[in-house]
Length: 101
Ligand SMILES: [Zn+2]
Image 1: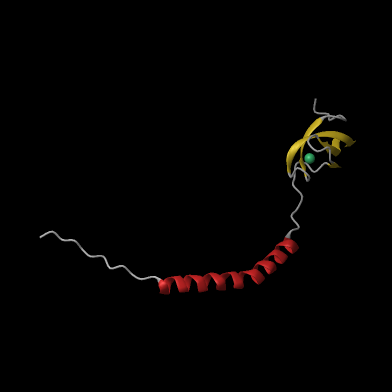
Image 2: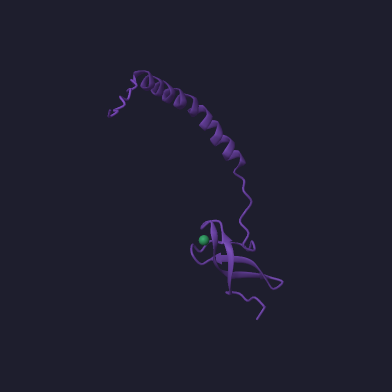
C-alpha cells in the first residue's frame, strides 16, 4: 500500500499550472517518485514533493521598480498640478445658517 508504483497518482506542484495538481508517476527512484506528469497540462518534471520552486523574481522586481520610479514622477506631477488648479478654482460656499426666531 505504501509502495508507490508507476502511474500512481501523486500530488505535486506544477510550474505550468502554478499550483498543486494531480500527477502521474512516470519514474521511480528508491520507491519514491522521481519524475511525474501533470494530469492537467501533461507537463513532465522532477517530483518536487509539492514544493513550489524558489522565487527568482528579484531581478524582475528591481526592474519593475525602476520602470515604476521612472513613470511615477511625471504621473505625480501631472496629478499634482491638476489638483492644485482645481483647488484654487474652487470657491468655498458659505453656509447661511437658517435660524428660526
Ligand atoms: Zn500542470
